[in-house]
Amino acid sequence: MKTAVYPGSFDPITLGHLDVIQRAAQMFDELTVSVLDNKAKNALFSVEERVSILKEVTKDIPNVKVDSFNGLLIDYAREKDIHISVRGLRAITDFEYELQIAQTNRKLSNGALDTIFLTTSLEYAYLSSSGVKEIAAFGGDISQCVPEYVAKLVYDKFEQSKR
Ligand code: PNS
Image (tube, rainbow, N blue to C red; front, side):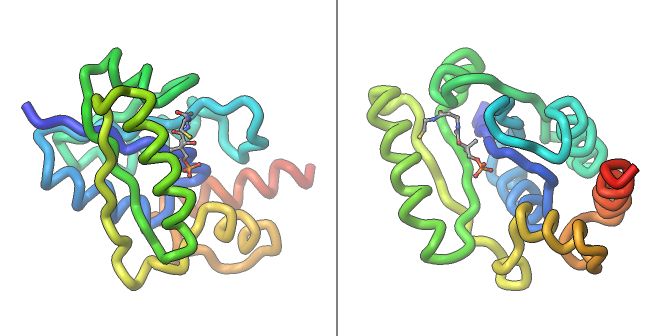
C-alpha cells in the first residue's frame, strides 16, 4: 500500500492546504494529514480542535486519515511505517525553508523519509494560515481563504478572545 503523511500546523487549514490534500489523496492509497503538536507555538486552535476541523473538511475523501504528532516527523513516520512526506510549495520564498526540512528529514532518517512537493494551485498561491488569522482578527473577509465551516470557527475564536 502506498502511504504518505502531510504534516503541518494547519492553524487553521486553508483552501490551499485542502487543495494539496485532495491532490495528494489521488496519488496515494492512504494519506495521513498530521497536525504538529507544537506547544511552543501560540496557536489559535488547540491540536484537538485542529484534528476535529481537519476530519470534518476531509470527511468526503475516503483515503484521508487525520492524526497528530509530537516531536520529530521522522520518528512519527517510522512508527507509522510511512516513507513519503507531502508538502505544498506556494512560491520561491517557501522553497529554502522546505528544502532544508526535506533534506534534514532525509539525512536524519538515513533515507527512510523522503519528501514530495506539490505546487499550490495558482488561485491559492497567496494564502497562508497567518494571513487568514490577521484578516479575521481585523474583521476582514476570509470566505475565499478557508472552507466555510472553518471561517465561522475562526470568527468565533476571535469573538471569544474579545470577551
Ligand atoms: O505548517 P508548518 O508549520 O509549516 O509545518 C512545519 C512542519 C510541521 C512540517 C515541521 O515544522 C515539522 O515537521 N516539525 C516537526 C519537528 C521536526 O521533525 N523537525 C525536523 C525537521 S527541520
